[in-house]
Image (cartoon, rainbow, N blue to C red; front, side):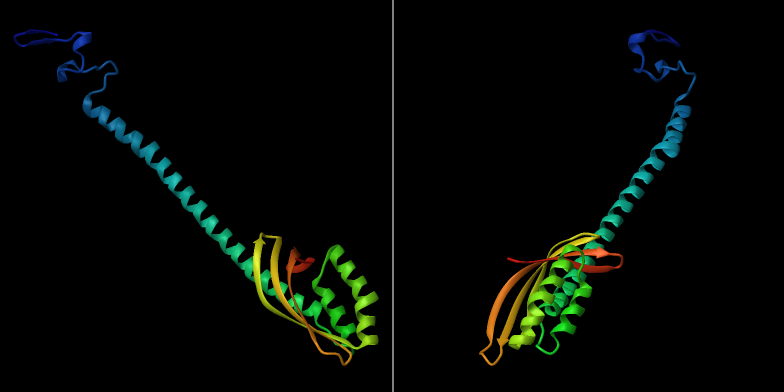
Length: 194
């Protein structure tokens, strides 16, 4: 920049030093450039930030709803596993046929077939011939996993069995109960003592 009285000349090295030497190649004045920046912020940056915030809020709402669904599935399947376990393991000589056939309604798949075979071939005839009765009581149930259509529950069972006039025998066991959602119902698809 060459300074002479009343005249300012700018060269490339002095650009940006004095307000008179600002680069004005685009013809924009400082006020006009500020307006451009405000326009860019107003039309591009702020809407983009608002969109990101809305997407983030939607994601967290989805996560919350999914967690609520999983909690509901855990509670439902623990209750269903408890009731089904009692129904499957409790019978008396006179009511074994009706009770154990009713218990099958809460079962599905190959497990239902094997339970039907076991109860028809062994349990019901044994209960009627030897006067066997069994009473199951669930002392606790804990959800291991639960998703939209599949769940696993650990069920803690106390079962008392009486054969004829003999003294009752008590058995404590833990059963891994697998449930699958078929339509709108949770059904037992696996029952494995552990």
